[in-house]
Amino acid sequence: MKNHRNTGARISEALRVRNKDIDFYGKAIRLTTLKRRVFTERVIPMQGHLAGLLGAHIAAKRIQKDDLLFDFTRQRAYQIVSEAVIKAGLDEERAHPHTFRHSFAVHCVLSGVPILVLKEWLGHSNIQNTLIYLKVLGSDTRHFYDTVKF
Image (cartoon, rainbow, N blue to C red; front, side, top):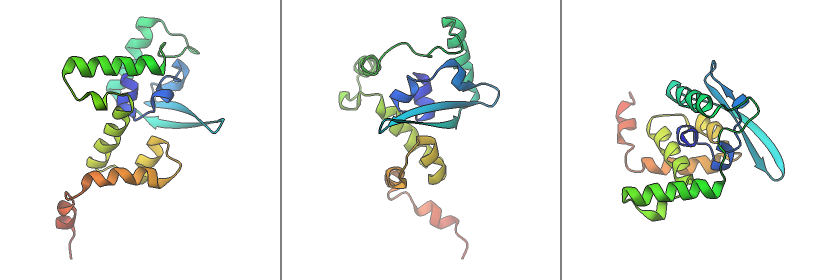
């Protein structure tokens, strides 16, 4: 599930990734989304450390080209996250895989990723869904103003 945390993928997208969807040379992952009975694809970048983790996972599990990277369900993913949250003593209200997607988006916004780039990475069809993440800046916008030369 590290794929999910480092890419902003929906859990359903992460669980659909096959070995052949990973481009180790280009450091990218092809994600497939099912919306309104139509599959759409997008390719998102990944960092080198994630490529290494996925490569090790593929080798250890002997995953073939057409095989899924992960052999569990969305329900099991939720259970894994819930167990980890409880073990860590964190807020159980936030114990679901989608929290990683939100965290990824917030981290990207705070790191200065342009909102249109983030929209593509997250696979949003409507920019309004991505603009929600700008709220995290809230009162922390003064530093932008201070960089403007008048």
